[in-house]
View 1 (cartoon, one colour):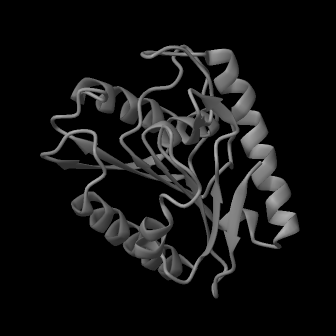
View 2 (spheres, one colour):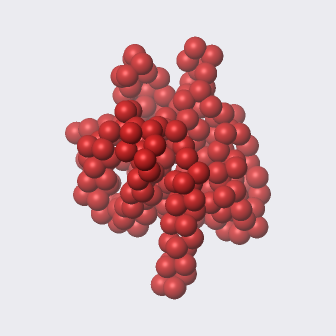
View 3 (cartoon, helix red, strand yellow):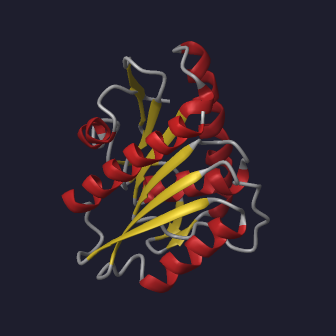
Length: 206
């Protein structure tokens, strides 16, 4: 899988999953705002649709190919595991950052694996799958960035996704903006603040 890795100076790693048609460079600046000292592993989707990289196929513009999504969920999780050995980073200290399409596949990975990520920052995700038994996510902390005027991710879907995560014992924080589906500086700053506060809280527990 096409990707880039930047070595950091602490033991944390940020895994970046771009939006529809993006690439491995799109979220680098966001990652540096979240944790400028962390390792960065940024992936490019291996599915190409109309010349644009994606992490899973679609059956139509508004319909996911669930078989492809599940297959790529396993592939991406395995790839991250392999990268942790290749680049020698702590697999238990990984935070995933996904936007839109990338947030959807990150959510799907969380839906399938108990300890896929220590933390997750999901900007404008949708509910990728329904009628699925979720793993126990009691050690997973999740930030969701959402827009009140986001037609792709309406408020009821944000609530549904939050409830699904919480039913699996995840710790979820939702931050709302008065924007649409675009990724705003406001929510990036909120995610950075959340990340820092979670880090401090975890350090205090040790």
